[in-house]
Amino acid sequence: MMSIPASGDRFAAFRHSSYARFFFSRFLAAFAIQIVSVSVGWQMYDVTGNALYLGLIGLFQFLPSLLLILVTGSVADRYNRRAIVAACLLLGSLCTGALLALTLTHSFSPWPVFGILLVFGVERAFMGPAVQSLAPNLVPEQDLPNAIAWNSSSWQTASILGPVAGGLLYGASAVAAYSTALLFMLAAALLIISIPKPAQRAASKAVSWSTILAGFRFIWGEKVVLGAISLDLFAVLLGGAVALMPVFARDVLDLGPWGLGLLRSAPGIGAIVVALLLAAYPIRKHAGVAMFVGVALFGLGTVIFGLSQTAWLSIAALMLMGASDMISVYVRESLIMLWTPDEVRGRVNAVNMVFVGASNELGEFRAGTMAHVIGAVPAVVVGGFGTLAVAIIWALGFPKLRKIDNLDAPSNP
Image (cartoon, rainbow, N blue to C red; front, side, top):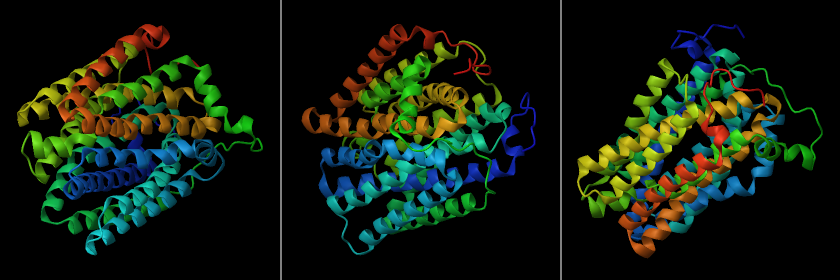
């Protein structure tokens, strides 16, 4: 792969055609996921009227990542990552098609949907480590920070457009929403299949408990990476409010499916602005401090969103949450990608994806369960204050992470 200097080149990663296809595949897949997420959440709340079921949506998607953690990373390190991603996208297409079939036959009910989401979770469990580990194989190391920023912008752009599109499509019909998501998922799979097989440093050792647990050992031994991953875990676990957005859209703010799409898009709007700024102007100094400030602002935005009863203020708070979360995501992903040897990258990313899944999907379960017991507004506000506390505790408990300065030249792991 030709090496192109990244300095001053905002589009350095796109000079590599394989990465360009990877980027657009991730965008289409993320767009489809957002449409499905909005549609399933609203449809589930329509059918059940119970916030607990919204929390269970997250739990069933998370369980496979936890149960398969010792397998998925090793698979990503030993086998063709491009083929794994393509297979996962095809499985995701089948799951989306199954949701479409339930809707067409008027059979949408919690437990069949949870079964489909469980398979979705298996797909995500294998895809997460593979897709995160594939990007560094598609660009030279000096262009990797640029690729990380563009990866985030791809997801965040989909997070803006996808929920709005999902809300509009679901407002027309659930069939239209799931059909569009299915087409996008299939297109994403075809783009990945079209990428030439990239170079990959496969794990050379025979499979054993030692090789399987290499990702855990690396993370535990590198306290900077451990601190970054665990910070995200507990911050989003406590501060996540996505699962309860159907409740806020319908019962608190009196909005319809389109309004739910707008709420779901708001964090992405804030995040994409920051992601584009980071692609052009990467963090050069005080990266650790920036990460902790980002987490604290995420908690503050969560509190404001929980207390707000006005649509514009709620949207502004969600934009603040997305913008601040983008800062911590950028620093965390940079640390993981740049500090991890390629031969264990899949296993490290598998652990990371479980932490991310725990923060997101278990965060949804936490929010849904608390909302069922104490109400949606208190569940979100308490979680926001919890995130603020996490930022302070981790800043004191991981001083080396707080003192990280320059992400362009990290210490060798």
